[in-house]
Length: 188
Image 1 (cartoon, rainbow, N blue to C red):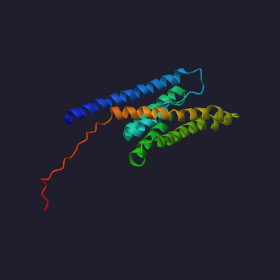
Image 2 (cartoon, rainbow, N blue to C red):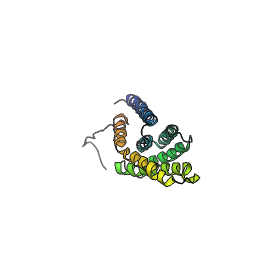
Image 3 (spheres, rainbow, N blue to C red):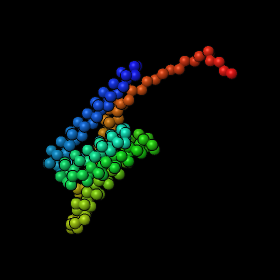
Image 4 (cartoon, rainbow, N blue to C red):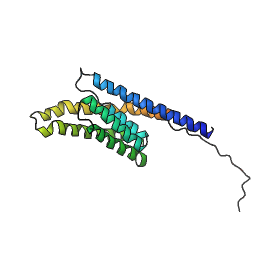
């Protein structure tokens, strides 16, 4: 394949992949903001951002985590930027871990997503309930925060395979070459 044609196709695939990522995050944001009938809404943007961080560059993962965190803050009606900062660092660390140390396997992303969901949930619980000393803050944690954390953790499994499918079909184009054996090589 021609190098220029390959480069153009990779750029087109990258743009298309990021457009799909953004549309997926927007659809999840719309779901989270319109499901007022059910109090324990799954926070889909956290596992989506974490799964994107597995397959993308660290800077791109950090920006995606920040955007996902800002969407989460506006959907929950909390302080703008708190989840953005939390998810920025979680996605950056996830991307670096998968780039240098970990394999891209479902068990690894389930563990890291669980850590991110736990960190985000505990910080929100602490700053919105525990710090003010409400009488029933432990009940709020058990009945509200814990189920949301569990549902959000379970949502990472299908999202990982969706993002993996997108990266596989809209990722970097690899070319395989077969080297032929030649008897014309002279060795001294």
